[in-house]
Length: 145
Image (tube, rainbow, N blue to C red):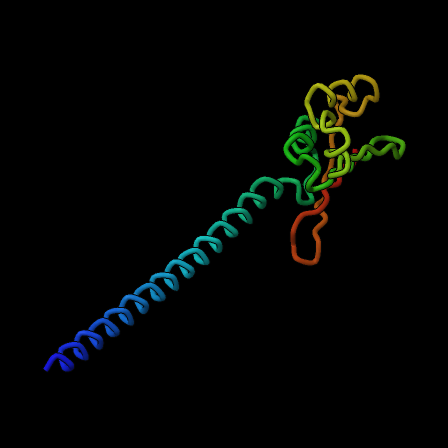
């Protein structure tokens, strides 16, 4: 008689263990699926933020120097910013600039560049163009005076 009760308790324990393992696997699957959904939402938000931030420079003309300065300070080198002045003079702010000389993205340095190089004349107006990579990400903003 003792053998039957031991067998019954062993089978109940095995079924309970299988139920617990099934619940753990199901909860892990739900957590992974939830994390994937959250990642997709985060990616969508990042795309919209980039679109809002830089779309104003998509084939736009009559931009003020303050618009160019704002783009430079916000970009921090990514996307790269090229500014063509009068006479073909070019200024460039890239990821390498950000690593080697991060001060160049500050407003003080930009004002100093304006005074020394005459880049941001208050009467100047700029046109802009976005350069995208094959995936559609913005890699460069070009401003022309």
